[in-house]
Length: 394
Image (tube, rainbow, N blue to C red; front, top):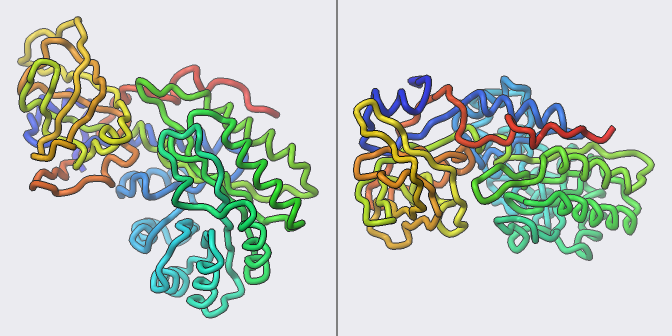
């Protein structure tokens, strides 16, 4: 993979016609080390967030050796780079063929469930295996999340009681898990989730081998400034201690966005300007999906070209339209850029290490697979600021 010192170097050298995706290995390593040093348990990277080979290899070299996978293809992607890392199949709905292949071909023994039917399916398609680790996923409130996951997954508290009892009969080890939703903006959500877990433990009198607090850990965007990440970890630690369990289960989490968001950015070119509307060469059918319906506002900056005119200090709020003929290919923003931006100028959009690559389509024939490594800093960072310098609870 070709490497550049900065996005400015890249643009001035390549003058790209298509959108260009940039990867920063240092950002991945920084976030990974922070989680490993600060979270009170094990880290499972959520592969769905960004399965690019460079991302997976960088995480492995930084010390991550467990992965949250949701398909056979994600298992294969991890296995390309490590045969020893633990893969946990945390999607609660799996086909019989996928379960069988995961267990017998790839040695996956850890599965997530939220229904009795899924439990039966796993038992049947692993030939009544005796070495399973089964996680019962419990539905919890997603009230502080930007993207709500609670409607699709998770057993109600009343259902989870019987499901945990059943799982205990068939599994070598059992776990309880929950997910507070993507881009969770308040640590209290984890406390509420752990409280739900505590109620299930108290009612069933089953002490799980694992408690999985899921993902949802946020990154930083111009209009979404989260609490200090250390506050999230302290809230989790305090809530676990409040359960007053005779023995603390092994604690795990499944971060995705918080680990890799800062590592990626997309360089786009302006095709046309209509007043405060910029028509660009990437959009919601490309790497900018989250800027559409979820309306996540990415940090943006105009890229200085060697031969370009002076960049105006006066800033203006723009909205974006992507290159397809679909009117839904629209990004409200606001994206704050120099007032004199014009056709053929380049813009960098940050925080696209999370889901930028995975959501791309070839709709209308617009698709770019130009990916390069850059060594400059991301436009915004949660890890290089005072936001994460608070002290962890002892």
